[in-house]
Image 1 (spheres, rainbow over the protein chains, first blue to last red):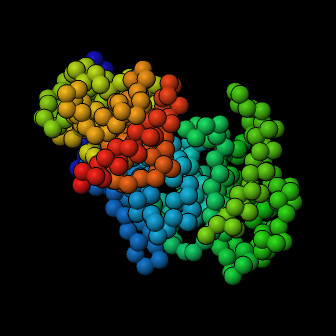
Image 2: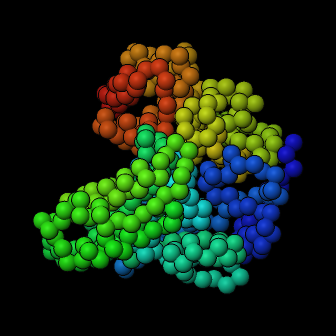
Amino acid sequence: MTKIHWHYPNSLDEAVLLLRDPRIRAVGGGTDLIKRPLSTVGAFLSLWGLNLNAIDLRGDTWSFGSMCTYADVLKVLEPEHSGHVLYRSLLHAANTPCRNRITLGGSAAFAPRWSDLAGPLLALEADVHLGGDKEETVPYARYLQHSELRKKALITGISFLNFAHRAAHYREVRTHNDMPQFTITVLLKMQNSDIREARIILVGSEARFLRLEKLESHLRGKRRAQLDADALAALVEVTFKSRPGFDPDYLAHKAKTESARCVISALESR
Amino acid sequence: MKRTLNINRKDIELRFDPAESLLHTLRNHGYTEVKSGCEEGECGACLVLLNGKAVNSCLIFTSSLNGDRILTAAGIGTLHEPHVIQQAFVDCGAVQCGFCTPGMVIASYALLQENPEPTEAEVRRALSGNLCRCTGYVKIVEAVLCAAERLKSER
């Protein structure tokens, strides 16, 4: 019999208090936990009783509770917002039963190299809402950079502005069920046929979360006819660490090519 | 630990280890139609409906559940009274070794509950979490589309 204790808090305050103990692990979808060695875990804390699964589009802001699953997000965005960057990225993430279980909060907090969520959240310049000693809302980009934020607080929700955009999401996989070696997320704000603003995120490189700023600034004010895929690829500066079965130079070359293709695909999308 | 779950429409008291997956709890209590395959959410052999949604039981701690509704392939239909989906799998030759079949049936059931008239692409997407090493999927997809047709004519 495993000596693991479970806590089932009914309030956020109770949960946050319990999570001060570093041996207590929060469980949402739990898909990342079940195969891990449990020797360092003293207890689990179930988040299912906290009612953190509301979804709301109020004014110009989308808000998602942290316990919303990928399937919940897809359902609410479909079909009216099927061009939305979050829809395009989560539609092919993992597989159908996993999408029914993976939560936004867990995925945003864990943010693995193969994440299909981090790219769109960074491209949307999303905020995460943290419950903890002091309730706080911070940009997701800052949350990812500061490990102390991750340690001391629980993500209770995610929000971002609702604005018109064109988007594309690329996953570098060998089969559709594979965890991606990297993902590329392209979000374009348009003014008629011209790109007003480009946000391009590459997740999974040596830098882990990389914003392709050189490519973004090149795209500003351009339209489709002015773009050449080879020239776009040349603007991508990216390196990968060596991984079993993957040559870093190959991954870098593939990331450059697919970044350019992704921009074109986003421009041609509706 | 002890917990009561509603399995195949019956309240069942389960005893399990605190770190045990739902897959192993179900199998330890005789629900062997829930198959143990990869145990990491890749193959879909252990698929069950949890409160109406298809999930990999290998990725769920039993301890995180209480009073939830579980439906396995045996709860959808039986050998003598198969569900339309199960009969369609037989009629279309969608079963070879049969190991993936309970998971495939659950995925198909979940799809047809939500979308009674799926396209082939929608069927393939719904089955994206289920691996079959025998059939090559063609017969399975045909079976789901056939079941959808039969269910439509029953309505």
